[in-house]
Length: 124
Image (tube, rainbow, N blue to C red; front, side):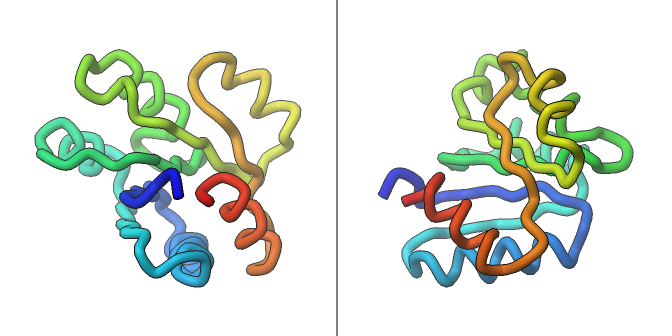
């Protein structure tokens, strides 16, 4: 398994719950935390001792969206090496053109089975 410590930053509680259920179904040894406020999460990442192995960011968040947060992570010497996967329900083509070298992209699925299948490909 590649990743054991995952952080999801997503302001949508329903999407976060679906994500956590999918992760839990994949492997019990994965520790996954959720943050719903991107600004607070970024501040915590800058001071925490144990960084996540993998970070999932929702693109459409208030205050600090996922694209801007990903850019801030890449500009921070301590955080720049965390693997980032941006998520959105927006058009995949539009998002890929915005991303460039910021991170990988995952389209948010609308059902549990698709979500689990996508996460399995990424995490395991």
